[in-house]
Image (cartoon, rainbow, N blue to C red; front, side, top):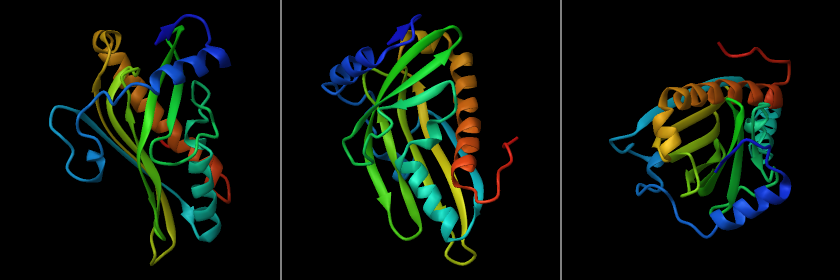
Length: 195
């Protein structure tokens, strides 16, 4: 959904209610667990957040609180959406003097001693079509904690198709800003903005 007016809480709630009755906009549900399907653009991004138990716990809490979306021009609504399979979330994006509302549903959750995160897939009310994983991983040997994003996508809306270069720019900017947001949330000694 595209609009020139900033969507208020009622508009977002109505959008999510409507989107919750739709299905995924792609067939390869859960494909980020293994082989990425052909025909999609793939983005892989990873950054070191730090090391140690404190960084690990902060990183997990940041994922639970959707801090990877604390980037100014995009946000996940509601921000307290539970990290559970089947939970729906709206991603509100401000770009190029318009707003877009994009619906996604959590496909699976990873939660063990060395990985924490989830994948969500686009619903029919999303500008893109595909899946993305938001994951923090801890190296059991040296305690390093990394934040990773893996996504496969293709245009899911006429506007996205027509504006594909702008869409790709926003996807790359989101990855950069998301990594910076996770550094702010999880690092114990400050952060450096990724290049």
